[in-house]
Length: 255
Image 1: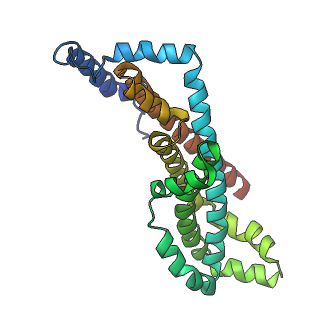
Image 2: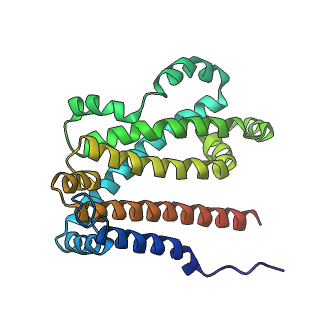
């Protein structure tokens, strides 16, 4: 007997209770605080930011930087990861370079990126690409190594070239594992993009959050903090939906 799904509104009970408790606290114990604002004030600040266009402009910049950085970093990481996963010699040759560069925090690259590219989209994209490159490389390499040897033997028997073998044999076999790598890369791209904006880049949602903090506007700061969380949730939900759709199509094609 199938278990009945609970109504989705129950998932909102705890967040609403937390908001109500925070509203009560800021209007009583935190009433004189310059660093806290009630959620109702944050909601009004959110409406103002939406009305004057700053919300959509900053969100668009951050999402564009995250998407471009993910596209570059994930594409290169996946391509090199597959090559390393299929060739033990290549993996051995690249082992030292990977192990030296991979632990470097992406935020440590910000000063160098600023010197090379200055402020703006290109600088942020470069840092996001660096951050997303390594997880896709490592996970892509592991997924390529787990491809069934029989499939590679069939590709060799059919005399497929390297590009054909990768496209027709390796990638379809890796696809379920690549879903996990893709979702991880999406999360990293958004987090790093906002971090770069908070630390250095005067654009996007992270900069808007810092500007509200420096302007001593806690209501607007909390509004941006809430909105960044909403955007992160929406991006993850979109990635999960894409994963399910691709899995369904793969299942239909296999029947």
